[in-house]
Image: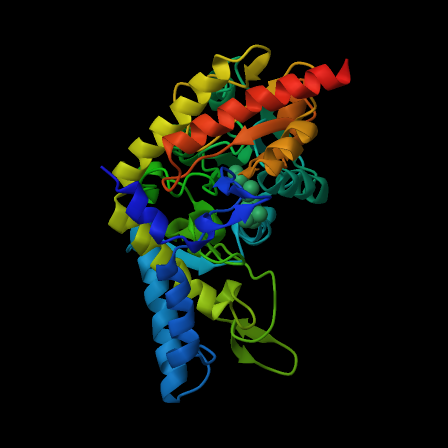
Length: 409
Ligand code: PMP
């Protein structure tokens, strides 16, 4: 059992008041709050270690390099990637997916080839591939969803054929919370020689993501969704792709020999890490993963599952409230609409009561269009939230919706 009240003491921001109400932060799918332990790691870095990496021979530079490389190994262990592939530091899932597309997939695309994505992708794992298809003449195939808000796996598996060059799919949807069977999809891709990418932005804190079991070529995630600073993240690149990658950004740190006319490049991961990286952030990312693992990933997943089920049941019981999708496995987020109430108005009133939730298209316009919506409300609890906070939120969704309905008549 998680000791939520002592966990909350690690997160100073949870003591904030918002418009005179205690903050109820239920927007964790957008970004998570940071525990003291991670803040301390950043302060420690700047107090004792700060220097540029992979450059100097002096003490601090070596110490800084070693701390960042240890963090890389830590992330690799977390992903089950030890000895299997390479972890590249990136600024977040978006950069990771762009790098995978431009450095690992672009050269394999041509007219006649296709890239398979799904209708539940975040724009970061949709527009990147749409644009790549425009650039190369390849065809973008979009896997539809079932009424329950799950992937149509028959469609997906039949789309992964000899013409398929790449498949990109999220492990967990940022809107519906649907957990996808990414292992089946990635193994199918491998069988036809297609490259696979898993967008793990929403999945990182909901259980172990084992790249060996999943069988993906790329996996991207953002640090800020697992309590690390924004501007951090990682892209896992499988060994299979290692020698097939080409650089994308050029500059310091990614070269081997620079001649007047020609340059040879360093191997992965440095080849993809041109310029000075986010050193303190990359180091803090490992401390965030330590924090999560010390809590216990299974315990976190169980507790968050209970909070989410409580939110879903509470919403289901309200008149005129429609929860979107009823997938068999839902992690981290539940979205809904309310008859006669604009999501923006509802979120604005909830904010005035101290409740932080997200509203809008959630960077998933293709998904919302397929659901016949243009804007939805999302509740995304984390392990530091309490059942009382969820109940308060549901109570206020009801009260504010009733108020708005009366007001709009
Ligand atoms: N994919 C998913 C599923 C996401 O939820 C997000 C963030 N909302 C991203 C990609 C993009 O993450 P970032 O903006 O941190 O790069």
